[in-house]
Length: 252
Image (cartoon, rainbow, N blue to C red; front, side, top):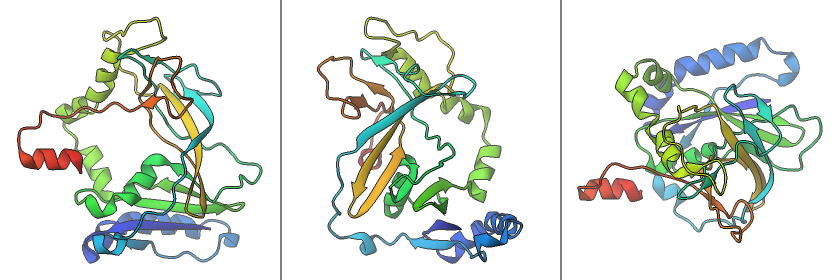
């Protein structure tokens, strides 16, 4: 059975904005096999901060349980061929791929780290909505993202300048990352966002076992660095901070 949830900053306005997408999803569900159960409307998650002002639950240090690579055609390889080194200078991307699971995983949730981030930062993100689909299979709940109507419109109406800006971060990585420890960065290469190195980690949040993958940009080249994921580094770019508001947004 699958269930959808979306953030609710403005209650009725959010429901209306997500309405068309929700209708399409529920229409598709009605054509699935009857054993999936009767469809239900998407539920909302309140964004009022005071509801979440409490002690943070126990969160265990994630442990890497596997990794994989994606090439320029998004073909899957169960190895580290897309793992690059940061000199200033190492790089690898993380993308979650869930293959057909033929046995129980023994975890409660399987998802992307980015999906968890969307949920946890909901009280502090006032610009973008989200919608998630949750499906339970053999004891584990798989969480994936559903494109909202607002996100679709934004994607289809991007200007050429906005498209270029989306690649700035990837290009920055080329300037400081190399293919191996003794290599040097090659900033002249063409940016290919399909290529990726992916890690999969397992952890626990309170009483819930989590299995997820998250984007990682690079790792330190020091041979004495701690094992993965402790050796991973995430790269960030930002416009020059000139005002208190910009500084506040940066640290938010």
